[in-house]
Length: 77
Image 1 (cartoon, rainbow, N blue to C red):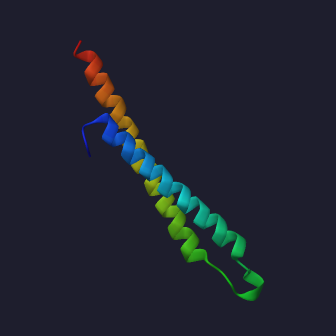
Image 2 (cartoon, helix red, strand yellow):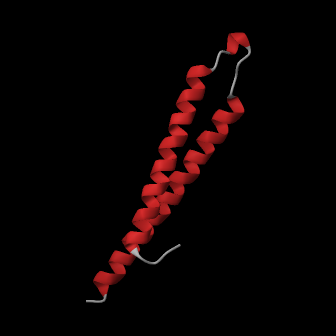
């Protein structure tokens, strides 16, 4: 993980973009499911939701790292 706030913020933006894409995928798959016709996407929906959760955790780790870097910078003065 980088040690610079701008790099971490850039990574967070990319993670958020990918998280939104996963969310859209889940929404699209749920809307196109037709259980009565045998069209189900349970595995794909589960995988997309899992990926979304992973991205949220990765984004949170970067947010915590940014806060730590800011705290360390403030404590030096």
